[in-house]
Image 1 (cartoon, rainbow, N blue to C red):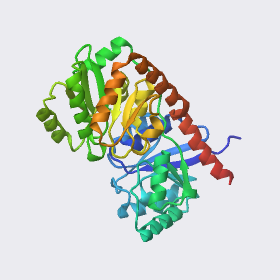
Image 2 (image 1 turned 90 degrees about the horizontal axis):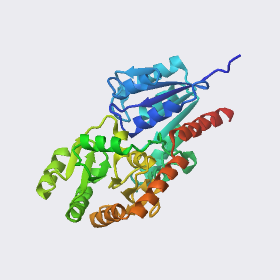
Image 3 (image 1 turned 30 degrees about the vertical axis):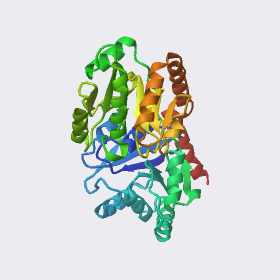
Image 4 (image 1 turned 135 degrees about the vertical axis):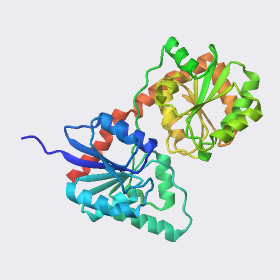
Length: 371
């Protein structure tokens, strides 16, 4: 007689495909479908839905659910869904409403993954309130890095509730010389130029201004480098105006939203992140898996991905001069570049693959069942 599958419902409120959505897609790709019956609950018209369905998993579209953590009108339909379907685990990603609904519906266990850094809370009463909410509506809280765990503790969460489980990715093969040339050429990188890229939402927290200042400094020393700003966001017009004022038009390329971003990340010569705070940084991980060295700000979980002097360099947040110096150092030293390239790929393979992430998550699911 076949063993009954454990029924897992993942709930995301995102309408776009952000970090949580990419995490979910990576997990689903390696989910043990012989042991787990996984369904995904999303807001209506979420861009994530077709990608989930393409992997063969059922999607429940919730018209009442908005793209925010607490959504009062979604509480009743989510509660009714869980009461009807009786999942063994509800695993939420930012949705407090889904956690409340799961508890109200009597779901045996509630998991919650924190995909971003949490602001420190100085108010003792607010910290106590957050701890009480987490105890009431979560049985296990997953932090995607040690830095996220520390930030959650600073915000009031009970350390005993938190488990660190690193995000995982698929290792990306390095493109051939011809493939790389074609990919970069399609984004306007002149033949023979090196490509330095930052793949991040064009929002304040990612601090593209520091990247552009560093690009300005490096551009004065090297004419063979093109800087790629990969992605889109609310600051695009402002950043494009800054590039024009700096005289960097033609040296800095804004790609906009890139559908198959991994191909471009793997084609870079150097990956950069300048975030003021970062949970872990999938874009660096994906580039590094293809053997691309990196330079990143020492913010949050970046230092858990980027090992200073081994697979890239860490710089202080907002330090454009040091960023430019480190970029120049890597690009100008072939032996150093090759060493960092090998180390970047090996480090990703050792601890950050999606297959390992999925196995570790499912072990957590099973451990709870045994208790």
